Length: 303
Image 1 (cartoon, rainbow, N blue to C red):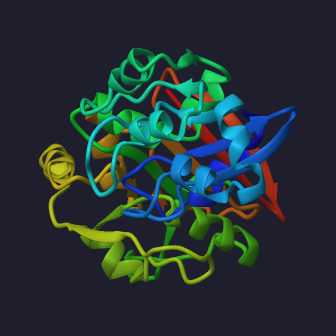
Image 2: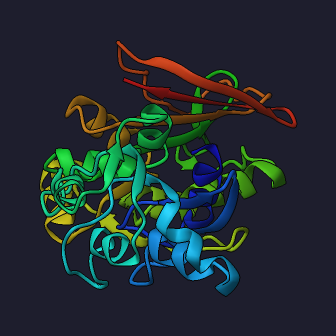
């Protein structure tokens, strides 16, 4: 299952709104096939793993075990059901990580396998398997996308400086390396929302030019009071993940509405003395990780 999880990460930034999934087939104490979900609309992990088995090992499938990080699908979508393929291939045992909360699956895959006489073991490394697909899981169990709030600030907590006229202007807080890290994060979400003031002050490109992946859909927010309506509309459009890259007013509106799952704060080593104050972190957060990128500190919080 550890190997299946490693493989699953190969689909990062390429499979959304689908989950990242890895699969490994074992027979006679060795791996005879492995695969992962590579691109949205393409074959699922189980399909790629079965296809990877060499012709000389095909006979071993009838006495093999397939390890898969997520419950095999049981419905026809862009691809046929993986549970049906496992049954037809003759694999007698399935070891599964996380259940699939998608209403089209939600236990049906396990039931289909067991009704066909296949032995199914559930919940192996379930926390790790849930973690890699936390965006997908949230979108399936909440009436909104998974939401990341992100900002960069000075050491004394300002997001922008003031010029002589008292107007805010953008400051480069990120280092060249932390920009790469940020672009990887962007590549993992489907959409980014930005406020009118941030557009005017920073004029950000909001793309993933420093990382391989798809550019997210850009949402311009003219009114900070629209956050509830925006996230509801995005979910109705099938969007499962959203990054908020706005200024302090837009970020505070999401915090006050309780619309966040993760908060990422990059803090530079220098101070500004005055400017646009960054939002206060909401109560009840816990620090997931803290990393240093050159002179900057990047902290990630979850509720």
